[in-house]
Length: 110
Image (cartoon, rainbow, N blue to C red; front, side):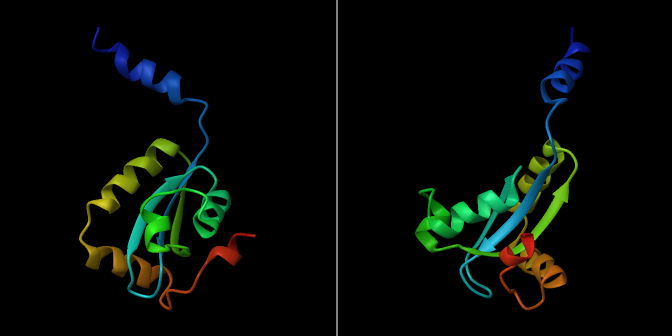
């Protein structure tokens, strides 16, 4: 019976597309939020317009400073969970290596 679980898992998620892990902030070295989505441009637009209540709206986190693409949404979700558990300094280093000026990358998505 135990051997069936991975097969069921593969069938349930087999048709899913890839995903994106991203980090938004309010300013250079400001508050950070790590998220995951299957549609990065749409999700960042939601953050920018305040369409979703919660942490990012409360702190005004509208600046996209980091993102990475994954072919598998499950891998993206796992990566997001890993990054969320990292110390802040590790997240800042990740951003600096990808986007040293902490500029808003939203316009690059077009």
